[in-house]
Image 1 (cartoon, rainbow, N blue to C red):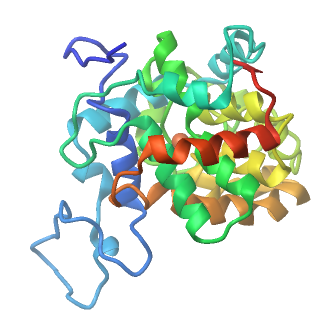
Image 2 (cartoon, rainbow, N blue to C red):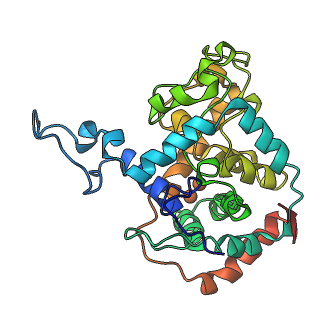
Length: 306
Ligand SMILES: [Fe+2]
Ligand SMILES: [Fe+2]
């Protein structure tokens, strides 16, 4: 199935899901390296001593497609929406398939070609996993890298991009202004509901992230698919890899418990492998398949529920 972009289709403002990821990567460049050459430096008050990233106004620099994507995401991701999608998808009664099979299935998600990345979904998974392997990470973590974006199969079931990808954030409590494009939240129905606009909102302080209804997307979905099979560190990597307000902006600690604080390090450890491995050479999926089939068998049954 091809996911084509048509200008009138508001479920697909992005030309490809990678457009969102490229934007995240520009916002969080590799430490010590300048941001990409799309950076526009201010012509007034330019201080050559300052690092490139200090100058960046990510919102002003965002492509119109990315801006529209975030507008829709912040508009529609309400507390109720997150609950409804969990009810709709977390019964895992759509398909039964193996993990490698799911990766091949996800490859049906063909985005319009993006000049920066013409990687397939499978290649991104393999690149992430191969870099973890190269760095001598444990086998469960390599496997976590391989499965981390399989939740994007939600797109193949007709879910709009803004309900599959995007930086995730807690619903049911006040929005951090460290979330990108915070002003778009003003149009979210929850914004004018006083129950949802205090620091803790509907939650007890320190309740733990497990009790928090994060905005819905591929992270929460793949966490639920894998939760019986991977170690807790891997499950945190899956569930919170797009929760940039937490793992990169240090927000929402008041909702965390000790387990969350302990496992934040694992989420941070994983993030560079997701974000910064894209420009490397293409992995050979045919040659790598036997290694990954073995690894999958170590942790997963032959078929799992999706
Ligand atoms: Fe992801
Ligand atoms: Fe990813």
